[in-house]
Image 1: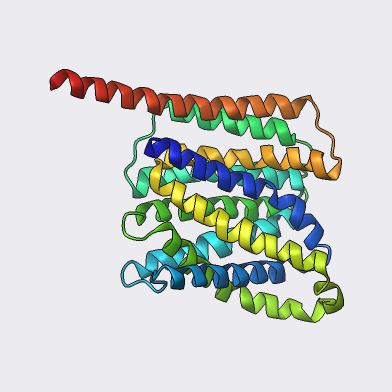
Image 2: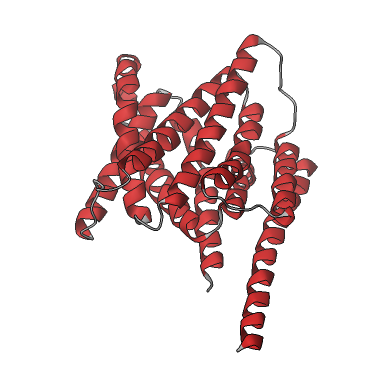
Length: 306
């Protein structure tokens, strides 16, 4: 299997896991305040990853690029997720779903600036198709002009911006540190950063409900699967796939989330879901087939010259 296809599998796995995040979070957030839930998922996730690092003799605290790794944890894992929480609360789920899918657009912009990657017309077409697909799936209703809605949109834009920035930084240092090191140190930073706000929320927690098995299992799933595993897969995929192409897989989140909402929460899937899904899958196919064709042509030229 080629490096590009393997990276696509990693990125698809991460995006699919995050697509199911809505289903579990919706249940857990009824009991656990948002920043407390963030802190708990990061804390447990770090402990799991730290054990894996110890078992594999992997260094957690880096010697080089400490500022870059700190930015990955603080901007990507903490600020981006926190801004998404606040933005969604101030606006609507529809607005949150649509605006945060601007992350691949910001990711491509940062890749051009920081990595000097060139973007092709095929990649631009794929990004546009995917974004249109997401808008069709989520609809454009619920966009108000109130002050809180505008503030929510601003926070959501900040979330998308920081996520795109983090993804490019992770790509930039992927040749120096492994996905395990990048993920573990980044989550450590996010754990420390989220603690002060979580400590403030502790006074409003019903601890009797917090220690119930449904909540415990939900937090464990969010920590181990949706955080440790998903971030590792995303960072692993970023190391193998060009940034413009990697960002496209972010669009799989609303697709998977809508499907799981239908399967587990009895939410209705209308015609818009299937049209949007077709556009997203077509976009991924276009960019992936373009990469494969390029590789074949290069190999043919090499064989001809030899």
